[in-house]
Image (spheres, rainbow, N blue to C red):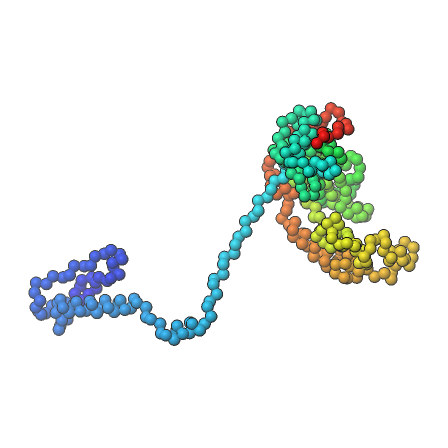
Length: 400
């Protein structure tokens, strides 16, 4: 506000678009006294001088002062500042593949089928399925075949339902592909806790009883491969009333249903979980991470004395102080940590670390199939079908 009562206009007001206020009009430039004008100043000239002085002061206050030269010198002497840390990249989760519509067949390598083009292999598999002359297997759509690096044949069909039908009838069409060919059946092992020790899993009727009490889980009794106690020695203890049962199932979706719904065993509802397999160990070099068939060690290493020989030719095994007992003067040695214990000892630090890594690797994997849907109906038209006659000797495969 100016001394004359007129609102001031600042250059910053140009950004807002407001026009400058009109200049006051004076009829005469006399120096007659004005009650709002201080003495010694005219009505027009003095007010304009004050406005210009105030504007210059405000403009100077808005312009930042130039830093002194010593600031630039000190900044030049300092090392350049490090760039800001980059934001951590979020890795996208890999999509899980649904392999429920795939089958793996072991074929005879000497037959030469693996050297044929994939189109001829597919036609041969389709002819083997059609030779069964079964109504449910008619019109099955084969998506394709592939030869795996292990020398096995991978067969992909249109749906998981078709794959189940082919698994149930594998004894009728798989031998027609090549001689001595067989279907690879996945084995899923689950642990059922708190099972009464009165159960005899080795009896022939044990699998049938388990299927009879859990028809909503098992599609047919043939998916139960085996049943055994997880710790057979503990069952013989008379004080132990319950123990853990290890059940092997040949169908992935059935094993996942057992985990989700639970099992009724001996009038008791039990909730199983996946069996935590021990870490992979090589029985040739006693190292972890590969099997004996994948080992590149030329000579074997014995797990008790780390000698370059197998267990049958170990000299310490024949040296005994008493009949039926190992020599007390023998000092074992671990092939992994060089400790005074065998390589397979439970308290070996290397074995403990490998077991912990295996446990971390399997943590969070509740089901066998990562795409398992517990609300899907897994028994639609899944009733097993039977042939009128048992599979006879398969005819020799067609000539190439």
